[in-house]
Image (cartoon, rainbow, N blue to C red; front, side):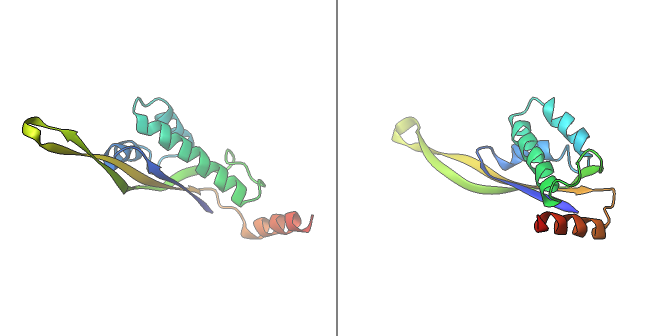
Length: 132
């Protein structure tokens, strides 16, 4: 079972975000949170919030029947795409202007569990919650 979380229009260049995201790809959730918490880069704060959101999405997908601590969650995939760009001009010598590009990005994070959950048990829990 996997869960997806997306973060859009992060006011940071995609290159800077990819540097942080590459360090957590394929790691367990606990390991990834530790890496992000103790990183000095600004991108790690954004990525940490996104990872916590993905964990919450995974738990909500199963109607809070299972805890993320009991099932070895890991970061299955993370990718960063470029978003729109704000274009500004800065004065330059001799009456010219230089273009400034303020870049932003979109991040998608996918979390999956290693411990298999029986689908029949999951369906029972979902049916019980819908009956109430």
